Amino acid sequence: MSNLLNNLPKMNTLLMHPLLSGIGTERAKHAGRETLDKLRSDVLSGTLTQLPSLDECARIVAAKISEEQHNLRGVINATGIVLHTNLGRAPLGKDLISGLSEVFEGYSNLEYDLTTGNRGSRYSHIETLLCEITGAEASMVVNNNAAAMMLVLATLAKGKKVAVSRGELVEIGGSFRVPQVIVQGGAELVEVGTTNKTSLADYVDAVENQNAQVLLKVHTSNYEVVGFTSSVPAQTLVQYGKSVGLPVIYDVGACFLIDTEPFGFSAGETAMSWLSSGADVVCFSGDKLLGCSQAGIISGRADLIAAMKKHPLTRAIRPDKLTLSVLEAALRLYRFPKEAAAKIPVLSMLFAGEAELNSRAVALADRLRAVLSGWEAEVIEVMDETGGGSLPNVPLPGWAVSLSPCGLTVNELEEKLRGARRPIIIRIQYNKALISVRTLLPGDDDAIVKWAEDAASSFSAG
Ligand SMILES: *Cc1c(COP(=O)(O)O)cnc(C)c1O
Image 1 (spheres, rainbow, N blue to C red):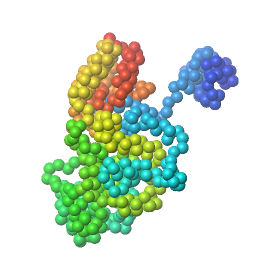
Image 2 (cartoon, rainbow, N blue to C red):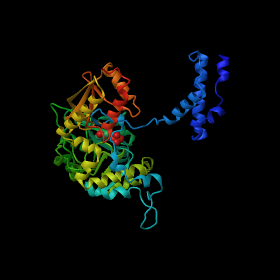
Image 3 (tube, protein in one colour):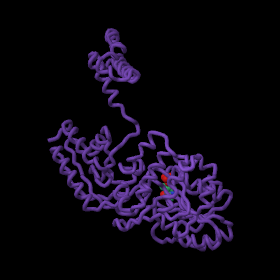
Image 4 (spheres, rainbow, N blue to C red):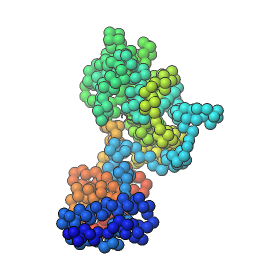
């Protein structure tokens, strides 16, 4: 054993090997040390009784370096869940990020007014666009919608009582609960109505008898109460708020910025519909139905937005230039709905027609069958999902390739696909391995077929 240890290559010898000479010394040393340490411990534990040659060691080190991967990396979403929270919610696609490298790589006019040469506002780049699209008087952006809610409440409701329907005291996920957010904002919650039924009279009671000074409506985006229910429409609440001079805040969560009917999609609502109904402030996520980067957008009355921009909390939750540049790219597209529908992946995935999805699934199944001999690749109808807590009860019929692997269980296949260099995340349902085509981006089909080609030889394919 000590003989083996003595014969381990020396670091300097290893670094001089031609395979490693073109690689930065720090990097080669780092990988070389890991390789030699591993060999040493394998010798000591007795699992290694013959040392690899110097050439072999150099090959191991070179492979280690070339295979280094980021922990956070791209995956292929074959689950059919469009806004998959665990997979980064909205994919941005090529169109939203092309042309942004100038901002990413170098300096930018983030807070610099190019007309006057003076300090500018980071919100100016998106505010005019947001107002043009939503019809709002003023708008601003923070890091996410949870932060937006905190800011809205901290600015408008601190030290005041906020009336919210008991049916809307929801948990959004990740311990973000409406009652707690209200407390965090320095406000006091006045619960209105019951879990299943809230009427305008309940709000009137909260205002007249319990001194509520702010009216908050929360879109229950991730669940629905069905049966013996009633709630007060935003419009009615807004009218009431106006009649008594109290601000109405609407946390919309997920909404569109274009009318989706012309694209054959009748579910969901637009930010415009809430603003035009007269809500004083609405806030919504950038990476839900908007299909953009993580952001919280606040739109509404100019005097209220101005107060929010001055609030100290704003500094702690302000968006960076990456967020703002992607958002601006998306908003520029939103001025032209057809272009937005074609170029914003979340929209094209949601609007994709069944016939189109079917033919994509048929084409993918044919290609997979051709390379995976002995496997069955069947095209089946599935129910995709919007995800991200959005449109929970809206059916999204889609098509998938159901793979029956030869010599592997469905779970083993799922694991192998997940372990691919570019991981492929599939859905298992009814003991079938499903590749749903709705959430595949351009090029993903090719990557899946390529994976199958590479993998085919290593499986006991018939
Ligand atoms: C999703 C959601 C939030 C939280 O938004 P994030 O952008 O995820 O922070 C808040 N309120 C509602 C109603 C939501 O649907």
